[in-house]
Length: 65
Image (cartoon, rainbow, N blue to C red; front, side):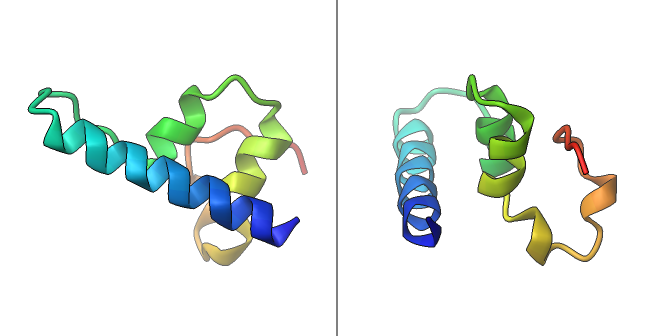
């Protein structure tokens, strides 16, 4: 499962690079991109690597604990 999360992060990061290189004025970050995905809250939390963040409770992604 950890490999899947890493691969999804790679793809999302590449998408952010593509958006930046397109000349579009949109400003996206990884958390904002994850928040826009049509996924359940627990999956968004997992993809956000929230367990690694010391201040994860202050983040804006919804979470069920």
